[in-house]
Length: 236
Ligand SMILES: N[C@@H](CCC(=O)N[C@@H](CS)C(=O)NCC(=O)O)C(=O)O
Image (cartoon, rainbow, N blue to C red; front, side, top):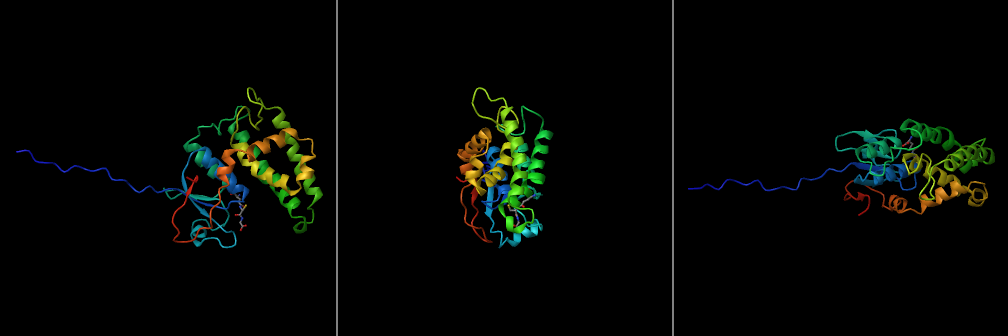
């Protein structure tokens, strides 16, 4: 007599997604979301209102800035650049970590100049009342750095497509990491920015802001609160 053995039925395991605390308009969070998109990493996105940071976020990352990524393994990644690297080291189909001009270290050094040198000038230019050396002097110091980007774009190999990138013949982490900050700088006084002799930088910025990738990165989410159903990023 044959005995029917119990058959193990496939069970759909609950998938624990990484959790991304994000703020739509934050340039650091934008760069993180761009890299999560490029790396095709699905997350649960929790939109943060900066005036009402969720206690869950502050418990995980008391410094209280976005973005913060909590991995299913329990890792807390609390710097935007580290979120980018986390996503792209898992999956990098567009070779964002493989510049064809310079190395990954050169790329990280360029991002550091954005965060350390350029961002303070952007803040001073954007909010002149909050800084003694704000306004036009800050704009000029920021412009100095932007001239460097224009020169980089001028030297980038761009055939067969007439598109220029910061670190070689394709877009990389550097372009995505810097773009949200250049975008903010350009928006402070668009007429002034458009009058500068930076055709390549303008085209680079326009290309990024018109891209489908950026549109997906800027999807709108309602602020998250405890108990809300999970919403996914990228949006489905
Ligand atoms: N070094 C951080 C900076 C992040 C940051 O400063 N984010 C801003 C928003 S754009 C923030 O969360 N500020 C806290 C606040 O405004 O309370 C990173 O790269 O992630």
